[in-house]
Image 1 (tube, rainbow, N blue to C red):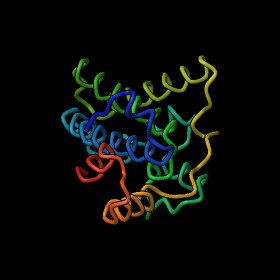
Image 2 (image 1 turned 180 degrees about the vertical axis):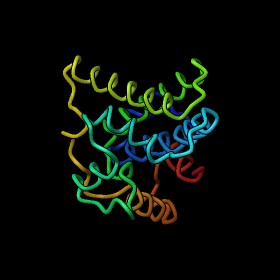
Image 3 (image 1 turned 120 degrees about the horizontal axis):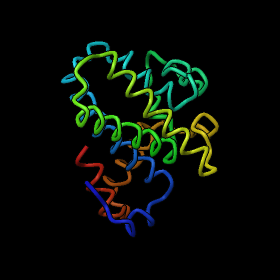
Image 4 (image 1 turned 90 degrees about the horizontal axis):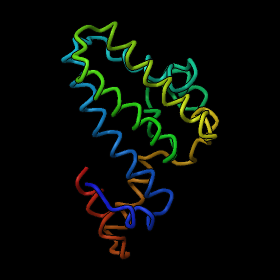
Length: 171
């Protein structure tokens, strides 16, 4: 579900995280489908190439360890703030687009493309004076914790905004 810029501005930081995480979740499905069409078989390797580009060489496991989460049990994307999720969303959507447009048809080129896009996003963050993703704080609560709290609030009828209620119920 897309919301307007005005509606987004009204969301709390936690609501923005939930919205961004749901966007990343959806777009990752498209990326993995495109990667599969590009003959990617090792999706962990493919994913790590993108993370290494965006995070200055860190793999998903490295990011998880730095964030203090269990890489085998928890998803790193669930422990990112909205700015970090937005950087990842840009990496994901641009990689998907390039794989399609350049008709990439082998795993190695798909991985290299994902890495180059991650590096380009990182370079853009540096160029505009933004904060690199590994320097951003890790939120105290996971996305699952926030979702549970918000669903409780919705069920309790505490007047939670319709835009967000609809977003949560669509997931």
